[in-house]
Length: 110
Length: 111
Image (cartoon, rainbow over all chains, first blue to last red; front, side, top):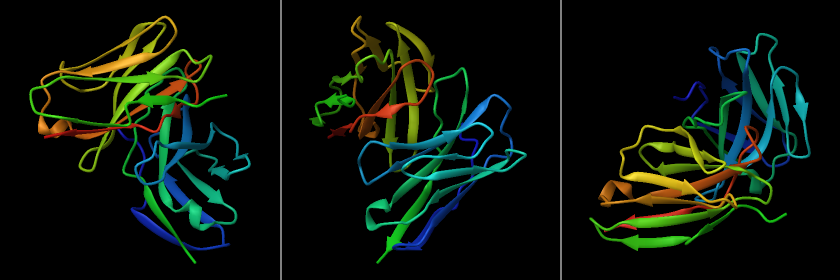
């Protein structure tokens, strides 16, 4: 069962940072936070994941609060191609089941 | 490395028929998971195979089954198709229990 809560939709101006929040208040110490995105009818694309510390890669940054009950995915300079549904998922370290919630539909506006 | 591939990409069947979908994982990946995506239920986990054994299973009826071969390629089968089985079926692979990489999916339409 999905253990995350995300806003249904968000807009972001092209070139600006997109900040996508996720609440996972029941997360356990052995659960990762993962972010994927899905562009219409394609397979979900992996973005980033983390356990406790903030993480950054070429696509995005992941900020996890100290109590680990929420996180924020940051796309530093949103482009039109970033328009997609973004899923925040918690996954047990030793398990391989990903439970997807409803995600956030991000629209990047020119 | 080549990504996860799924065949066929599109499929049309009629109620009562059965269907087999195929997934080839990324080279070196031993775990293959299957998901069903529908507008009403979203993305739902079907099952996971690792080293030819089903390791995890979601809450789907027995009409949904799968298997994995020694080369890690996987197939899923749906018997006695129902209209509600129309969906995008996604396959994802991972090395062990780590980041999953998804294929493009198979769009199944049941008439």
